[in-house]
Each structure stands twice: as C-alpha cells, then as structure tokens.
Image (cartoon, rainbow, N blue to C red):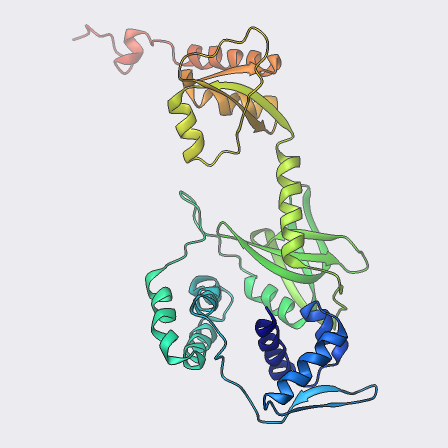
Length: 338
C-alpha cells in the first residue's frame, strides 16, 4: 500500500510539475504529514526533488528528470492498454493518438512484462454494442468531445421527448453506454446536471467562453446514480408472475431484472417445475404486451388489473388471428373456382 502511494506520488509530480502538499494529500486521500514523510523517503532514495515555500511554492522534480514505470504490474499494464478501446477513440477523433499512446506505454513497461501486456490487447476485443442493435453515429460527437476536453460552453439545438429546444450547456463529460453516446452537462446559470443523448442533438456551436467546473463533480458517481434513478422511474410498477422453466431461461438470457418471490400468497398453486418471480414494468399496457410475448409459458398472479389486461389483449389477438374464410385464404377466389 505504501509503495503504491509512493509511486503514485512520484507519477503526480512527474505529470503535473510543482504541486503543493495540500493538493497531493487530497489527491492521494492522506494527511499532509503523511505526504511530507513520503517526500523525505523519496528524497532519501535518491529521487531529485525539492520544495519551495510561499504562495506559489510546492514540491517538484528536477527539470528533465523522469522515471520508468518499474513499479507497474502486468495486470496494471494490461488494464491501461485496454482503457484505450480503438472504436470509441476513433469516433472521438483520437484514433491515431490512441495508437501512439499504446506504443509509448509499451515502451515504458519493463521488458519482462511487455510481451504479456501486449498480448492482452491482441487477444481480447471489446464490443460495447448490445445484440440486435446498431451503433449510433452522432453528428456532433467530436464537437462535444472538444467542448468537454477544453471546458468550453456550447449552444445546442436539442430534440427531446417534450419537443425541440435551444440551450447553452456547460459539458462536464461523455459516456458511452451500449453503443450510444451521452453528454453530461448543465445549463449555463443552473446547478442541476442532466444527461443529453448526442444522437438527439440537431445542432451544436462551440462558444469561446469557458466555465468553472464544479469541484465536487464526479462523472462516474453521477452516472451510476442517474442510471439507477432512470431505471426506477422508467419501470415504477412490479408484476408477480408464474413462469415455466422455458420462460425462466428466456428471462435469464434476456438479462431481465426479475426477482424470485419466496413468500407466496395464500392459496397460490405453483405448477411443478415452475417458479414465481417479480418483474418491473413501465405500465399496465406495457406489462400486458411484455407478458403476452411469452405466450402460455407465463401466468400473471398480481396485480389483478394486469391479469385482466393480458386477458383482453389475448382475446383481441385471438380475434385478429381467427381462421379466414376460404375465399380469403385462396387470394379472393373461391377454393373450387375454375
């Protein structure tokens, strides 16, 4: 743990130049006293660094001095090589930079680890798009990336569920989820952070003005909380259903978020081999269509209004698919016509 922190401290000084003890302590989540002890240990080990007092002071390495990544393990090197996925990098206009970075990273990895780390990238391919879905190609992805990297405001024409609107945004980050790109941003003058699907952006013009990024904003934490909130709001209702072994396998393969029901209602009879599960649904109408897609392999237990909706929809489907008259089956001619 301590050796890893010392390496991280060394990398921070090498990457950022002069850094105060307070900034180093906050970044590494330790006390300033611990940072000062670590600085003393690095200096005693022969690392050429010094500190300066004052408002513009801090610790820094001797100009031109660098270190090799000799503390990097094979798994860490492999993780870094995997971080630059070629597809997204190319879409962002960073394809050549990603190749160059990978070559430089390989050159900096110790020779015994180089072959194993490079083999990971050659033997593992990451496809972020789900089955039966085509990847989106947002027209303004590269402009959005430029706004995010440079911290510039952007005037955006956005087409959402409630219609089209024009707004000035302060882009805070980009997210690639299941082949779709999203921009996380807040409107100028507002505190609320929102998610915008880049495929819905109809126009984007980057402004010259920058903005102050919220110090406490964490993109990964925001995304996890936002997706959990979206999924709970999208499917606020739950349905109890009996499922056959075939239907249970379908739910598993479809990665449906079902939950087994262990406490059954009084008088409920579960057929041999079947199970009772709870499924999230958007609405009664949506739930009825979802359940009917499994045919006779699923039976709704509750709520009753959903069971009634499934019965009505099944009756409508049966009526629509009733046997046709002979003349209709023969293409409008009688079956015994000459």
